[in-house]
Length: 349
Ligand code: NAP
Ligand code: ZN
Image (cartoon, rainbow, N blue to C red; front, side, top):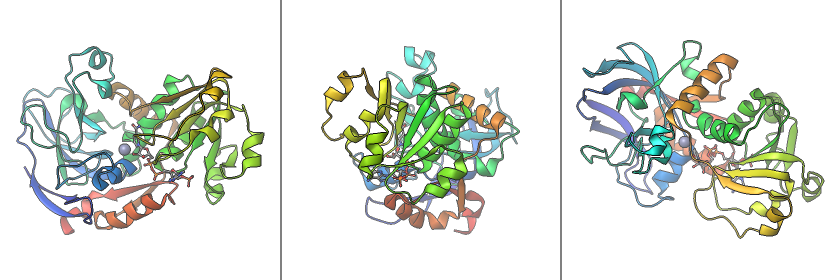
């Protein structure tokens, strides 16, 4: 299938329109017309080469909402016209303990990422959601609940599941004292989901410039990480801290904020962090851990949870042609929401 997207042609070049072929429909494939595509900071890391060299031209995008336009002969769950979604993975071995346990993101043979990964059958490089169409095997296509507004939901597919999964795994529930570090795409979804789970939520930010957003979200307040007195006063006051900072940083200023048995879970920086004072961990059985997106079953669960509670990411709708400006904002870290591209505009790009 011939389609159009926006691609990175190198780590330095601006994103540009790109015409390319999607694979021919296999028997277990669903062909999707993409309606909305979220812009994750991971897309920027990837095209910048922060996580290693990439197979350019590369079409990023793993927060995908669209409509089924064709199905393979063996597809059972979906039919033409269904509203569907695709997240960060498009395949896995389906046969190891992790896949059987609905944790395909930890597939023993490596999951196939939505973009920049070799297809398991043909080795051709997967291309993501900054495009008009995508073809994905049925098992990795999510059902969009009827109660969810399609135009406001794409970021649930990465920012939503990446924050929901650790909140659930570490048992955040009614009354839990939660802090979210970094109020960007992931952070603001983490706040909304933790609040919906009944937690008391504080945002830890580099300044108080996002205070109005924090108040509007219904969080308890904002703790400015550069305010050492306020940070000292917050010692031992959280059960769970979700750290969404996208760069190498020092977690030693945050770990003392955990109460005994508390956990700080990193989802932002994929790579080294500054040296850690293990003493703070030992003196309170505190943990530092990491978490990667979530499995397909749990991704469906968070979509259904958002539909039930009418939780939506704050989406700032842009045209695909504005992607370079959106990336510039992510690099600055000045967003407290998610950019979402209206892909219906792509024909005219
Ligand atoms: P984002 O929208 O750019 O938000 C990141 C926020 O972190 C910023 O808004 C800012 O918040 C804070 N920040 C930025 N630079 C900082 C710095 N140098 N020091 C301290 N704080 C800083 O990014 P995102 O889309 O939420 O993604 C966040 C990270 O998660 C990225 O690295 C992304 O690759 C990663 N990610 C991981 C997974 C996973 O499965 N683990 C999935 C998706 C994304 P304040 O202004 O409030 O400080
Ligand atoms: Zn993402």
